Figure: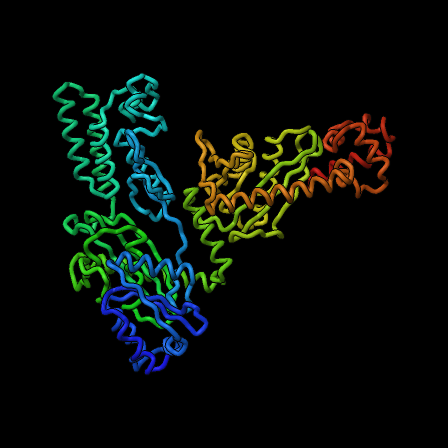
Length: 604
């Protein structure tokens, strides 16, 4: 666009807040931006004397300009963000964030339930969040249920159903975890009071909750109900300990958002902290890529709008390292020089620096190409979802296979950095188990695999998946314990078909989100071990009932092997048979050769 053309266009651009869009000669969207004063912002691109090469290139390509006036910062952000997502303009800042964050929902229903969800439905329900960690959300819900007696059943507790006596209290009522609204033992007003305490806990505001419990405790004591008073006393103690261990900045600080940034060439690394009632209740790291050489201030202005909308923050104050301008004039911008806010900003900057160093480390390990980076994100998500202490960069999965109760084999596949490591796949012919016994077979192959890794001083996996559920998991754990590896590797069982995860000793299974990346990775690993095991099993069957275990015995041919297998049904039965029994089938000289070879193989 020439200077003459710009002079014709500028008068038509309003001096109001809104969105501007730059197009090239082919009507391709080049850039989307938002501004407090559209006319000034647009003209600044054409009058700047010190521009980066990329900005000059953008200006050179601009053929036409469109704009949209909006009423608020939120409207501007949503419009800008939707256009960027839809058209992915080549000159816009690229935000490296495609995660779906969980919410805690208070369902719009009679006696509302409280649970975790990733989907927001416009049905009048209250959504709190989003939160940055599924594991922390689950811990938070568990913490709430320990202290606030709210229901977790899915019954339709309408007034009519309760009046008709359709429901009976369950074990949760007898354990003191629910007040029995299903039988009309708790009023809606009382339940709403408990929900208010839930909301206070979720906001990090524990004082009203403790105060409420103390009032209840005094009433219980006055009524001589000392058992319930003691329960409340323990809840109060637990809540006070929880508050003491939280990252408390200053109770008087109130609510604030803290955002810090590290800029390196065309990349920016940000740390976000949400502070409520003086406590840090959420933190998140985000990476952006600058397309026009934007400076620290410009990147922050973009990031602040994105982050506050993503996490639905209503905090009245924003603490940042440099002065910035935002469309939301009601938001107080603070660049602290000293005091508690300065310490808080320094903590955020420290986290941003660590995030940047971690990026450099991954880059040094050549983990920054898109595919490997995505794999690593999935592995990190799996670590969070399974509550693992180590990042499962090395995963092994075992599966047994047999055909109509015959020819038992096992297979193991290995995934490293979220990808198959085929050179580490292993096949197992079952040696020590008589007949078909999946539990004993699993114990054998797990023992053989990790005994060898220990003997050869090779690295152990961080996660072992046993395909088959609780029974086979228990059998595998027998070998793990014998090898004293129970504190070195995490072993889980994967139930057939229903895709439930079992941990050793747990009665309840862990169910991952059906479309979660973690479950997709586990499915991929499970399907791969099935494929590998079935391929090996078919090969063995086609060779004739594991005759490969005797193929290399000098003086023993195929006819002899087939005769023995027909009589004894399996190599294991031949191994256990006496010399006399084998000789009765194939003669004494061949029997000696077979028995000696199988005994030698067993030693190996």
